[in-house]
Image (cartoon, rainbow, N blue to C red):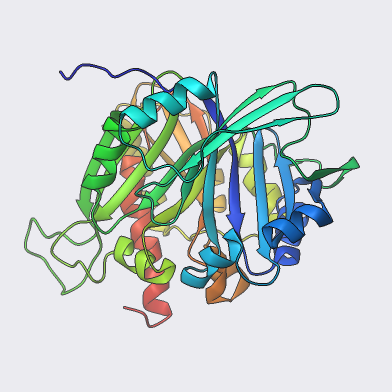
Length: 388
């Protein structure tokens, strides 16, 4: 076993920064459809300096910054010249920003900025810096807070949060999933630069290529999950698996996103049945469809996987199209995937990103048995759209 390298001191993913073409559309989506609260917006001075306007949304511990270009030249504008709407920056809170900087410098990280320092009127301090990554044009920012009250310099908090009340019960970001046309360089970078470790992996193909029952298409997947053991931050990462590279869901994502990037965020809930039922009834959110055959086979699959028994009624899972996976007795996870933004908005510029909702009941895996069901569902949708 390789020697463990020193931890960067990551505490958590503090927030995820989006770049979008239409901030008002995102505001409606988060505050009305997903019932997030809007905490505040960027100041006129920050908008002028950064050439973008921003709003911040929160539900539970899920914190999202969303920015739209104002004119040309800003970070959001540069991202959107190349990509549809997408995740442009992942922000980490760290214990010691100087230590994180020093370790990354020693490991030959590529820095966008040196450490930037700010002090607020109450004497609170904020220090942060950014680096490039192999995640396409998604960057990482490392932040240390010492009593600094605002989310960032130039952030104007609303007197009281506006919009939603988190009635769906979102908790935190469980993991991020990214797609790559070739994954190994990113895995090596995450291990040798970020200090993450291998956590989980799977590979499969939607067609029975092993049995030679190939129909000339299908979607192959190789997935590797890496994590930071101290913070338990997890990244799931996918690449296409032969023989049908062009029709792979990963390759199609990369074509739609116009490069590697973050495919989805998984948000935790405590009661997925109540959450999904409420979302289907009131929010207008659409989810990836799951065929009835999945639930026909579920009792036998639950037994075969070793779960043995579940607390939920299978008919309720069928009605809501919730997926289940696990490999230990009475330890499993429940998950469902929203349709991607381009489908929800009927706009290719909204991008192929989507959200996952997950409830963990003792299982810390990633729904390996559900990957095929999800990918076959995406494949059916793309066939219906005449794309494959």
